[in-house]
Image: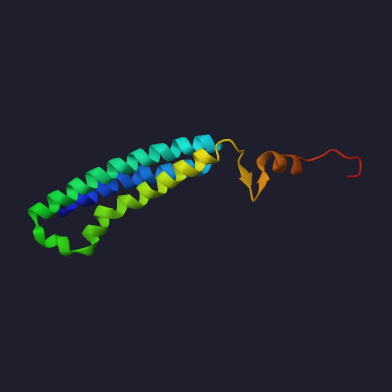
Length: 121
């Protein structure tokens, strides 16, 4: 049944979107690696459930295998699995380095933007 695959996609796409937002707000590379690991786990679960729903749908209605949107929904979680896996690896590699902005560390930016008290105001 087609709605099963759609419901599985809806069920996992929402938490995956929240995790992408959490990744952007993480304050250390180690924290980002942890968020990415949770995203990877959710995406793998999504992939398992989507494949199961796909097989069930095709078994009940074999003609839907020709529908490209059904095949796309079945394989869509792989995009997230690949992205989260890449994110885990990269952020673990960078875990020993401080976060930076365009090659400048955040501590340097804080020093540069700290207002100074001067008598020339």
